[in-house]
Each structure stands twice: as C-alpha cells, then as structure tokens.
Amino acid sequence: MKPYKMHYVHLFSLLLLGAGMVGAAEYHVSLKGDVAGDGSSAKPFKMISDAALVAQPGDVITVHAGVYRERIEPPRGGESDAKRIIYQAAPGEKVVITGAEPVKGWSKVTNDTWSVTIPNTFFGAFNPYTYRIKGDWCRNPRGYHTGTVYVNGEWLMETNKKDEVLGPVGKNACWFATVDETNTTLWAQFPGINPDQELIEINVRQTVFTPSRHGINYLTVRGFEMRSAATPWAPPTAAQIGIISAYWCKGWLIENNNIRYSSCSGIALGKHGDRFDNTSANSAGGYVKTIERAYAFTLPWTKENIGHHTVRHNTISHCEQAGIVGSMGCSFSTITDNEIHDIHVRRFVQGEEMGGIKFHGPIDTLIARNHIYRCNRGIWLDWMAQGTRITGNLLHDNSSTSVDWSAKWEAKVSGGEQDLFIEVNHGPIIVDNNIFLSTYSLNNRSQGVLFAHNLFAGAFRIVAHDTRMTPYLKPHSTETAQLHDNPCGDNHFYNNIFVERCDLSGFDSAKLPNSMEGNIYISGAKPPKLEVNPLILDKVTTELILQQKPDGWFLNILPQDGWEARKRPRVTTDLLGKAVISGMNYLNPDGSRLAVDADYFGKAHDVSNPFPGPFRPTPQAGNTVRVWPR
Image (tube, rainbow, N blue to C red; front, side, top):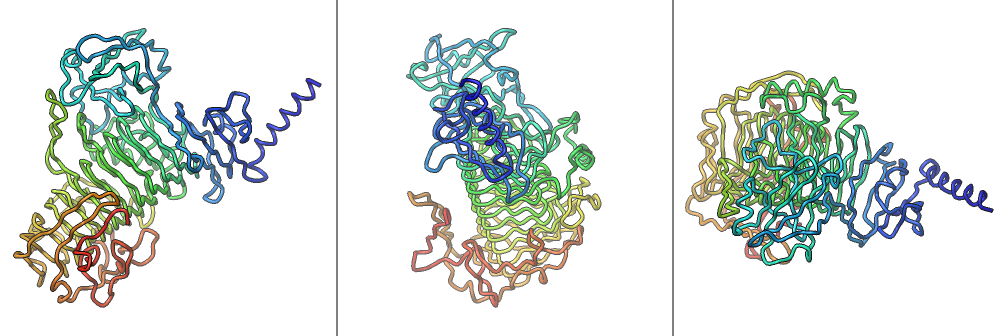
C-alpha cells in the first residue's frame, strides 16, 4: 500500500500544478500550514513563496491572517490582463508581509540604552547594517544605512556616533550599529521599557515583493500590509527597488495595500539594473545615456514591453525617498485614489529624487484623485512627461520646513519644496481640477503645460530658462524624437483660482507665448500683465482652511459672490492647439480628445460658462466641503 499512496499524492500534486492550464486554481497560504502542504484549503502552504512557485497564469494565491516574514520573488507572471496571477489577502483577514525579524536577548548598557549581538549568518547574503544609502543624486554625509530598528512597529532614528546612543534620549530615541567579520552589534535607546518584553525588530530583507528578473508581467497584488524593508536608493539611472517593485515589468495591478516603513521607496515602477547603475555623474547627459541603454536592453523600453501598471486605493507612508517612484517603467500607467503621506519627513539623507510621487517618463500616464500630504514634494514629474494628466488630486502640507527631530540633530533642508514640480518636460501635460494648499504650489520649468480649474494657495517658482537638453518623444511612444532645451513659456492657465502667495508675473518675460483667461486672483495674488481682464479680488478675506475630522478632510473655501459674472472658456483640445516644442495636441492619456467638462468631484461643468476652480462651493453648507474621501 505504501508505494500506491506515494504515487497517489504525486498524481494529485501534478493535477494541482496543471490546474492553470485547464482552469484557474486557488492556492491557500496559512501560518498553520506546513512543508507537506499542497495549497488546498485543508492543507495550505506555509509560505507565500511556496505558492508562488506553483501558481500559473489565471491562478489565485489567497493568503490568510498573520505576519509573513519572507521576500516573495514571483518566478512567473500572467499572460494577459484577463489571465493574471493574483496574490491577495483573504477577505476580512489582516495579512502582514515584512522585511524585518524580531530580536531578543537585549542587555542593558546605561541609561535607556540596551545592546544585542547577532551573528552575521542571521542576515544571510544581505546585511542592511553594512549597506549605506547611496547612488546618483544622493547626499548622505553621515553615512546612514538602509537598516533600522523598530519598536512595536515604529522605527527609531539612526545616529553615526556611538556616544550619542549611550547618552540621554533626545526628542527621538536612536540606534547605532557596528559590524565585524562575525557579528553585528546594535545599541538602541528604549525609554522606559524592557526590549525583551516588547516587539523589537530589525531589517533583514531589502524588499518584500520583487521579482529577481525582468518581464514578470500581469500580476495583481491586493489587500496586504507590506512594510519594513531596507530598500536601496532609487535614482532614475539605476535599478529601482521598493517594498514592492514592478521591476521592469508590464501590467501590474497593485491595489488596497498598506505600504509603509521603507528606508527609501514604497512602490517602485521603474528602471532595470545594469553595470552602469549609479555612474551618471549626476548629469543630464548621464540620464540621456541611460535612456539610450534602455532602448537597447535585453527587454527594450517600448510600449509593448514596459509599464501599463495600475496603482489604486493604497495607503503609502513613512518612506524616506518616495511613496511611488518610477523611471521609464511608469509609462502608460494609472495612479488613482491613493493616500500618500509622511514621505521624506526625517530628512537625514538629501538628494533630488524625493516626493510622494517621483516619475521620469510618465508617458500617457494618469495621476488622479490622490491625497498627498506631509511630503517634501507632492508630485514630481522629471523628464519625458508627455501625454500625462494630473487631475482631481488633493495636496497640502508638503513643506520645505526643517524637521527638528532631535535635540542633537537638525535636518537641514533647502527651500523650494512644493506640491507640484514639473521639470524639463516639453509637453503636452494636463493639470486640472487639483487642490494645491501647501506654502509652495508649483515649481515649473517645463513647456506645453495646461493648468485648468485648479485652486492654488501657494507660491510659484517660474524659471526663465533651463539649458539642459532633454528628450521629447514621438506621440504615444517611448521613442525619442529630439532633444531640446527648456525655455520658459508655452503654458496655459484657464479658469483657475489663485490665492495670496501666487505670483504669475514671471510669465511676462517668458521666451515662449502663454495664454491665460478666466482666472481669479484673491488676497494679493498677482496676475501677469499678459492676461486680459483677470478678476482681481484683493479685498476679499481668505477663508481657506483645511481640517481633518473623524469622517474626512474638509475645506472651508472662499466666498463666491460675483464669480459667475465673467464669461469663461470651455477648455478643450481645440482651444489649446499644439504644444510648441513637441508639436502634439492636448489629449487624454488614452488618446481621446480633451474636454475639461467635469470638476474635482466628477460633476459636470456648465459648458457654456464653466465655474472657476476645482468645484462650486455650496453656500447652504457654509462653503465647507469634504474633499477627502470623496
């Protein structure tokens, strides 16, 4: 009987493995499973990685409640949007996938400082306490590492001086590490607690969900909490790895996840790696060469191969570089309904790649209905934003204010962070129906940009000329048409509301022509001379207050008396003409003709005379409107 039983189990396993060929199979994963599990609901796999090895296109991996301490490297993807491989948390169950491991055996040293020594074999091939944050456009003079120490899920600050961790606790507790050939020793401050009686974790994995090779397409990842990864710096010129990474892939759907605590990035939709990583000398020319290599890569950067991702309904927070980052791999994607906050708030590493969303090459990409706050920058489109639409987003408290996170250390931050930075693009780009409430609303050094029906409450930075030669592309393609410098102008402002610090007078000296009509300037906001007959309301008292309440975020917006008295244009493809440098029409990302006929909430405008700004306040509600969630 024994040989027959073994044959029967083997046959059953083969049937399961082949289920994707005859119909979708569902594999279950549970911490109650064991190594003999077959993925059935009765005998689940114990690890998500076990299910990943057997799942075929069309299959579903359902993960049940618990904390999974592993890195998932999906070995294959789906075949199409209709035949995906789906990774999902079981409905109603909390599933955490983490890049950290718990550590016990702490010994008290002095004051509130404890230490522990761990053999280096604990980390395997990757020890984040030897790996420093570094790369193109990164400044890390204090030599901070990608690893950290967590107390009950919250991270501590690193110091690079042992005597500081041995001293009294400042505004924030800190940690320090040394590594020799055999062991890693950590010192950490735990005010008022015994660490062996709490959950103390340290990073051991660089990422949580990232394939080890390119071209793993059509995956769905939904419903997880993904956290605590020692991610590397992700410049546009190197491999971009986040807590979850669509690593030079196509067609991923990332939805309804809580992604947090990354040493650098949360979601990465970007660049492949090669031997030229981080060798650009921080130069525009270096990135041009990176783009050229992407065309010639084994899996070339083309519309057929790369991008087309959907990222929606996620909460992304506590990442020290970017909430969502992507160089070229973000093309033809849709980024909607995400809440992104507390990005680069500790600011112990500086550079040029930080933001709630930081994209290079978001061709025909839609960024809509996101809530982005407490980031150093909200949305940063840097190079090759063409056919991109930014619509219906709420951005606030994205500030350049220095963060004094300790009595001993103070983050030094250069000014100029803002809600939206559009850098060296040639358009067309559409920015409509957004609410920009930070101290700085806009840093614009691009051409071919439409701004329609937005509310701007912060200052503008208008750059007269950026001499860098940057690409514009053939329509709806990744293929470079030509390189061009970046003179100021070819911007269009229709039916916006500008408040207080907004000063558009810099456009009067622009090299390229601009068009402006139907805008309102309130409480000292300054129109350019080129705008004919703007509505200027200097004596109106600003009542622009955003408040968080138990049921959402509410904006007390300005009074509206007389706003409808002026005739305003309907904003369409026909009104705008073509972007001067790229020669392209203003279209939706899907290539259809543009008509900004709906507001922030999706309600129809009066096309004969559209109301200014992102929506019409309701006097019956005291001009207070819930702006998130919608």
